[in-house]
Amino acid sequence: MNYVKVINGTAVPYSLSKLRSENPQTSFPEQIPDATLASYDVYPVVTGAMPETDIVKAGPIELIDGQWTQTYTGRDYTPEEKRPKMVVTMRQARLALLQQNLLSGVEAAIAAMPEPDRSQVAIEWEYASTVERLSPWMDAMGTALGLTDEQLDDLFVLAAEL
Image 1 (cartoon, one colour):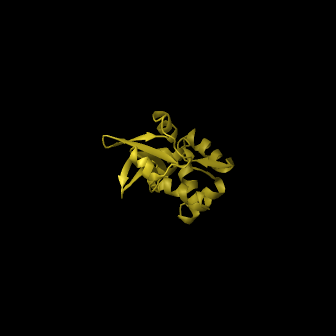
Image 2 (cartoon, rainbow, N blue to C red):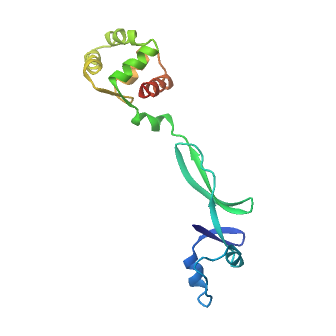
Image 3 (cartoon, rainbow, N blue to C red):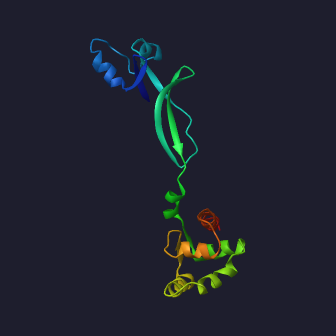
């Protein structure tokens, strides 16, 4: 369990070993009662609610409903942080494109690309086992299919579920 010592109204992380070392003339039981701790301005810290986000960090320790509580802050990954992890199999990619009625436009989009991109993308489309969201040809393919970055991200999310 974590503890704080309240000094001038501010909660400072603290430990029972520090309490014992700062009070060498006091004999504390192994399990120190909360009332005894409070007489030294030492209090247990309870864990507050964790946000349901991608990234969670410990926030300040605050007095909430009479208990010193470890708070947390959080945020979701930005699209730029998510994209490097977006990798799907070509099977998943094709199924997602099919579900979104975009599969038939892929061949035409590849054919409309200038060389040498056309040949390179055609090889990737035909023979790659996976496709990465940050692949150099993915933005060109998204543009050719009339997709925004967000729509392309959503297509990868859909594909990953298939």
